[in-house]
Image 1 (cartoon, rainbow, N blue to C red):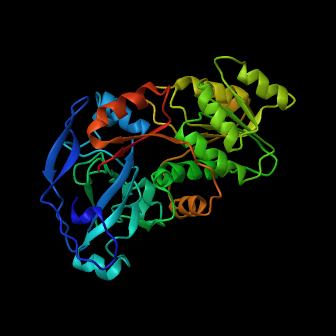
Image 2: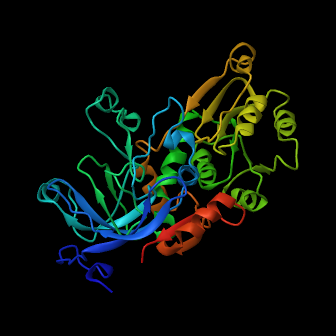
Length: 373
């Protein structure tokens, strides 16, 4: 056990090892567990000891070599390796640069999280407060100057958006702050009104988080769709009024039937499967609101006349979890949203390949988490 394994006082002096275990991404399917140097921190930076870090479906798409990450044809590569993956992390402050110690209102031992994106704060989006769409768009775990949390330690750069996390939040819930923030943002994009019929496509970690966030908008009926009956059972526990498996039921017909033939008011897509897009367009009413959150690894082709001439739909994208981290932390701390049971597997960092395989398979797991120690 090292000194950093037993942090008991915010003011204690912490000794650091010279090296650490980390998963390093060298390219598609070329991930290796290595011993690397513990990051050095500059005057405005913070070093964090990772408590745990989730495996996201986007991590799987990156591992598999999806074109949106590695580039294809005229599309530039987004991933800049070698890089340590992981953007669903939570950890504890172990070291701060001199200016960070003066300006961040943090002490060694405090539990923290940083938002996925490290904004440049100079582009037109950042200057307008739209930092989550930063033109530079550095996201932890995908560019090698912003390494992620599949490691024992990681560095928060000066531009990071950092939030304190209460120690009272159990680890299996604290590690869900990032995906829950994304879920909250997607729900807010849907502009749910009292009494709306809302359909959530997908009951993965994001879809399950959307249930609690949507319930707080007082919909008239909340419907959740998924191909996995175990996930649907959990969705029911979390507050879904109706759950349906598209492989077993005519979900479009059922939604039309329960809405007198009009269709749902809001459809939020989080499966990442192209079929879910067409399914949503078919079941949404005229003048309805469609929210797309997923990362796709293949094009989704639809009849655009449905969006325009036939239904005049409002189509919204949802990216990351801007301004939602404080809400996610509060909801988990005060138990205002149920996320118990979403983390199904906690694996040591050495078993990262097993974790990737489990998430890719998706049958027995919901959220897989890697724990460095």
